[in-house]
Amino acid sequence: MVSKAIPDIVVGRLPLYLRALSFLAAEGRQVTSSQELGQKLGISAAQIRKDLSHFGEFGKQGTGYDIKYLSEQLRRILKVTEEHEVALVGAGDLGHALVHYDGFAGKGFRISVVFDNNPQKIGRRLGTFEILDSESIETIIADRGIEVAIVAVPPNAAQEVVDALVRAGVKAILNYAPITVKVPEGVQVQYIDPVIHLQRMAYYL
Amino acid sequence: MVSKAIPDIVVGRLPLYLRALSFLAAEGRQVTSSQELGQKLGISAAQIRKDLSHFGEFGKQGTGYDIKYLSEQLRRILKVTEEHEVALVGAGDLGHALVHYDGFAGKGFRISVVFDNNPQKIGRRLGTFEILDSESIETIIADRGIEVAIVAVPPNAAQEVVDALVRAGVKAILNYAPITVKVPEGVQVQYIDPVIHLQRMAYYL
DNA sequence: TAGATTGTTAATCGATTAACAATC
DNA sequence: TAGATTGTTAATCGATTAACAATC
Image 1: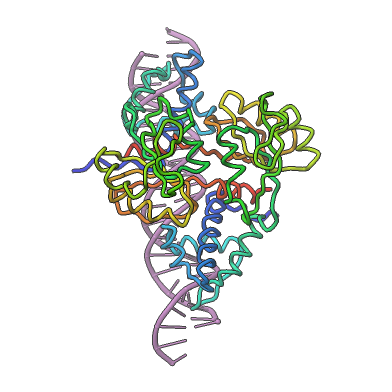
Image 2: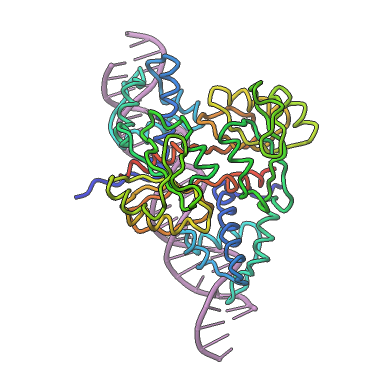
């Protein structure tokens, strides 16, 4: 017998809970409640309790949740207690911004290698990284056992890069290229495309 | 009597349909079907037809959808036939990448003004833009009637920037800062936070 | 104890899918 | 015409919410 799978939509909210908890912790708070968390996130208290109940019992009646404890539990559930090495493909403006982004620190991810296919860029530096040839994605990522990658290349190159990453054994891809890519079962892809978000909001203008 | 509101989740898929149609058009294709679109997007054909049916009848039995016509209709529905001026707040690495991003062209948005609160940056250039003082957000955005903004500032400054944007009359905000911000009813906010996406995928590693 | 808040159940709500008549 | 595909209805599925006993 297999334990019931957790709905993906529930998994998708856990990082938001963790983020809100981090802010509360940074304010020196010790304890919170499903009501407070919900208010901060625009989510109902019942939903937060229900979501958490998929994974165990983390609160105390009458009191609420210990912020540090719940954070630890969420990090464990999300597998972000240790930092995952992340391969970045694409050393353009966006790659530059990502390499210098300080928001990954302590959140479970650390960019540790950078690739580009432009001969003008290969061998040069991006931040503290030497830019490696995209041709070497498969060998290097496989050798280092990297499972997470960020794709920040032009749309016409994205599928090809994704294919190489998949062959290298990458299991989670954050794709900034504005195309839907094909990946085999068992490989996760998430998309970031500002145009999609802007168009969605434009409907309500 | 009020016509039934369109579910937000439906509105959220329209930009994906439009993006897929743009790619098909770029390949020189004239006609597509709900089945083909669904396959490309990982969405069921029935759902696509259902989504579109909220807005009218755009296809032809036995044939499918004229790509150019459906694209036009979706652009009209999403209000992206004309380009909206976009205010960018934050002239850091991310702001730099956004100003140089070529993916906005022809999609309904054009960054047209850039703000930062750093005296070292105010008055300097970012791409073709002079960086303006964040203090002037309210007057300049209100004067120019800008309704869309992108927030690319550190988390501790984000709520304050959002408040100024709201006072200036902005109705749609794309927030890259990793915090949930408070806005009044009638103001749309969308979030982009790579950490949230990465953590969500990490669960499946 | 009294008040507060959890974890869980059952009810409600809404979204997705299957199926098919209409028709190009 | 025969085959294909739409738009729509009804059924199914899944997610959210309300309510409350348990209990800190």
